[in-house]
Length: 436
Image (cartoon, rainbow, N blue to C red):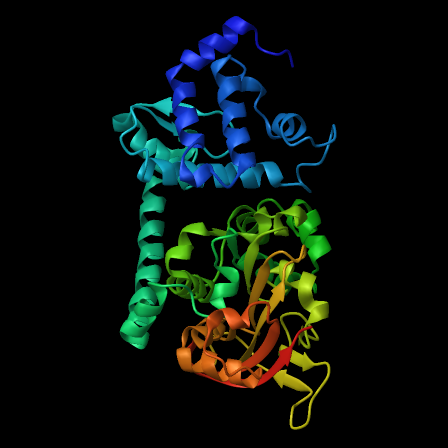
């Protein structure tokens, strides 16, 4: 690619679109990500100079991210991940600092070409871009989108209302200051925090195929290829197509996300929610992370399984009771803790809560995994309760009151939840382990 001429450089500096981009990359939402600033400037410069047609995932990966020629974008999703982050940051900018800008910039999903429009005409397009709807298909999805948004908002409002009623003003008082331990370990001013929810479609795929699954399989997207072997007119093919092209998570994950954001307080501004299919291995470096779900629905959890004492076990996928195996039982502990047969049943389910260093040992990872959805939701409820956190500290041998005295204390806790009609109504601490 030829460098722009001095005349071209002078022209772009005088272009109001480039001036807008310079204001955007100088704003607080972009200060902590050099890569996002470079990406926005790159696509804008290419578009202004008439080379928007060159902006493909391969071109950006090779030119800007220095990927090797011919690299596989199927295995390396870093360009798509950064483009999605960029769309969210643009939405944040125009919602706050840039709400009076004369132009609004959006990058529709499925494209890397920036679009500049006056605010009165761009508001709808920006919202669609932030929600992942391309202009070419937006008109066909508006009705579905409206009902979907209503459903999501209803769920989130119900969760927040429930938590408010359950915890009263105590939770609000806590969240108005620094996050309480152990939330303070994953929500701080030094790191971004990625909250990674479960991939419900992957869990359904494992049940349909009776495959145990693995992170390697998930990264290679082998499970997405099975649709090519199905009759294109059959119901199985249509279901597989839906599972391949949609992004679904569970109510338990939504509830836990609501809990996490509430407990994060002001630090929630540095948090973002991600779908596990959008991550690559390098995305788990140098930041704080919260992984929700078990390896069967969130394969990234398996990266840390060898550090845990309580490990999920399932004899026949989808056709046997799941359990946590106690690899090193202490006196009065069971060797196996079995949960519900199916989500929605009445009885007991189990979950583990683990706090560990991230893979680069410069941040923290909080893992909340239940055998069923009820257990996963119970993990969030357990941590949101001050008395439960006090019991956890006591069980780990800490009696001090200063939150910073618990920094870099790594642990694993097994909790039991009693469930009725698909919802946990009580939680109990069963066992703890220090992780060295």
